[in-house]
Amino acid sequence: MMNKEKVFLNSLVTLNFSKSFLYMSEYKMLYHLNRMMEPFVKAPKKEDDPALIKLMREKVLDLYLQDANNVLKGYYPKDLLLKFDPKNHLLRLPKLLMDSVSISRRRKTGKTKDLDAEIEAPDYLKRNYHFQTDGYFSDHSASLYEHQVEILFNGTAQAMRRMLIGHLKKRFPEKKFFKVLEVAAGTGAMSGDFVKSFDFNELIITDISEQYLNLAKEKITDSRVSFNVACAEELPFKDGQFDLVYSVFLFHEIPRQVRDEVFRESFRVLKSGGVVALCDSIQMDDDSRLNEVLDNFPRDYHEPFYRDYTKWDVSEALAKNNFKDISSEFHLLSKYFSAVK
Ligand SMILES: C[S@@+](CC[C@H](N)C(=O)[O-])C[C@H]1O[C@@H](n2cnc3c(N)ncnc32)[C@H](O)[C@@H]1O
Image (tube, rainbow, N blue to C red; front, side, top):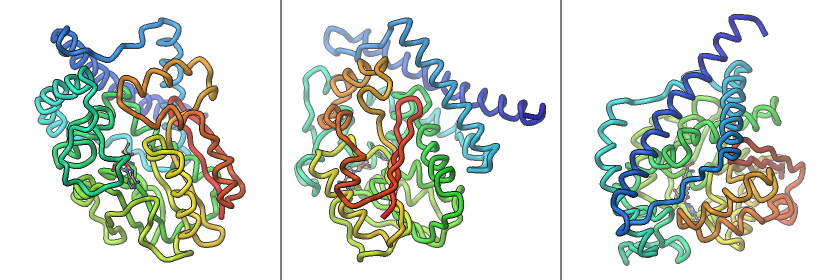
């Protein structure tokens, strides 16, 4: 590697680390606030085993090196790493602080169905995932979601999402994804990066939450993109239309049988030769040193289907739904699958 490239790579890694320090300090601030409120509010257990901390640091560095290398290879523009809005970040902090108290109360009292009774969604989804206020079903929840996820993952969440772009570009360097469907896009965290990284004709962004999708709509204004409230296991699209169907952080949130239905639907709407791709959690024994982290996560953050996901054979489920050429890789706490129809 030339010196100039090395400097560029190091500056991107440093940039990612500075974001991590910011989110880590916000995690600490919320953690100590919740501890101060004990015994009324129980805070999540912080993983403080020194060997685990060292391992996580190494893995974060690996992730950030990979992220910077993906930029050097031209998989995505460096702008994706520069995206940061300090004003809105700061303005969200008081709201996040207040909300963390409600989250802790729900955690302490085990309240997981603290939602508006009128919500129209499958029963398994009507819950406070991560004990978050209103689950996925309010503007308030949508406005805090991406920031909360970054705090939870010490600022590594977006870099982990971006690895899906790297995975696709590496695996299918010649393939053109003309018509693309994103399922369970939430507030469009990945969609925005997808738009800037791929040469496509049409992208349909879907989610079951109208409120989350509304926020995605506000952020992504590209004439090739449209938005559609849709359930991933019952897609309102005709057979054989898409070149790529992808999702990020969906599969661990839904029951096993529904995951299977999502693959069946993805297969149906894909063209022959089309690609299904997903980014989700790593699974048990991908790195056995992290098994304990995977075990603790669903307890601290109300994720009723997560433990089952970590033991689910994704490749087998893809094959059962007639996908072929199945491939996977993992980085830090996320794992990426792709397969072909
Ligand atoms: C953990 S969030 C991930 C959101 C986004 N992909 C991201 O990377 O931030 C899970 C998302 O899945 C959506 N969701 C959950 N079950 C769904 C389903 N069956 N069909 C469509 N969307 C679903 C939720 O509304 C939520 O936006």
